[in-house]
Image (cartoon, rainbow, N blue to C red; front, side, top):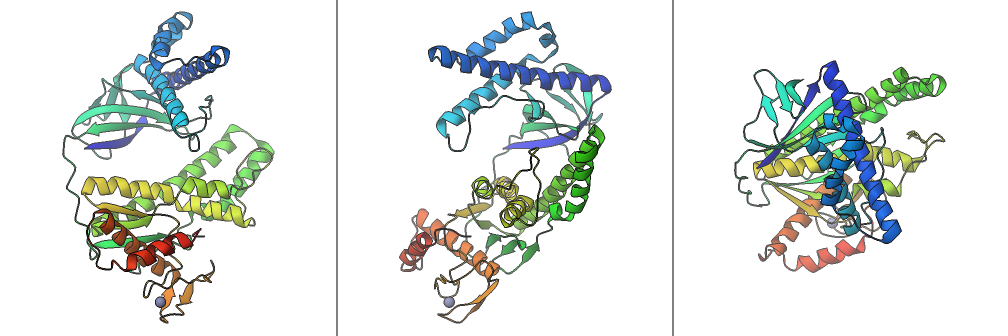
Length: 409
Ligand SMILES: [Zn+2]
């Protein structure tokens, strides 16, 4: 099984200089390769392949001798990354834009593919060009074959290494999908998550809580500028992101431990965020303002961190042999009565509770949705597996209902 481990690095002053040179040179090679590709295409419609570009690194080194200080693998990898970016673009233009030139504000990272040694006793990681080893914070050790590593620097100036390891263990067998051991999750804004058994996880709204502080810092920065003020904003954003991640890790671990199968909606977060993109201020800064309902929703989606959460669940399910069942995002999980199947077309977004006109059951909106998500996922799974469902007659009704609701708010 492939697993990743991320550690914070504590480089010495000298190592910091060399690390920053690595980021800069990889960015340079990436941009030059991109320019070469664009020029070749524009002038005579030719496509330059990655290995031809890799060969050009040798020539480039003659003109820029300082490139010898940089690990050659990392330079090659940036060209491979560019190649992947192009492939993604040609395969799916909707989701991947044309590769962009990188600047200092882009994500700073470089990859190493071999000769990575980790010394858990002395807490040092040695990679090519850093043979003395860089100190790191050990939070958990691992055993297995190291496949590759990525060194990165975040905007607050901290350095990290992410190591991919093959632990040579077979992934565990998937648990059987059964009604009793499955749970449905409704992703929400008022409650972060609602489970089909009625449990609710509050939305901690970390960004909202720090909004006042953030506004003060941003005002200060727009008046006085300066690196110190900017750094304070970056640190606050990082703090919010970490709080959010910790909370999601706790919840996803608990859900995976307690259940064999987890059903959820397949939401396309980036599409949802695009639809309600907030207005940007003149200097392009993203200012969350509570007055604009659309940007408020966007902020909430972002704040809830849904995308990261689903990824966490998927990874953990793989490690522990659990199932993640996804249903389409247009299925009417909110509007369907989980008791009798009636679809309530009059349900509004602000109806937190509703009474089914058919059977008279009173529903909590989110719990009802979570139960439906679980039921839809289980019935879909049964048909996919070719097993006869107990409620075969219910299926056409369910499928009809799935297409009748164009949007789930
Ligand atoms: Zn009903």
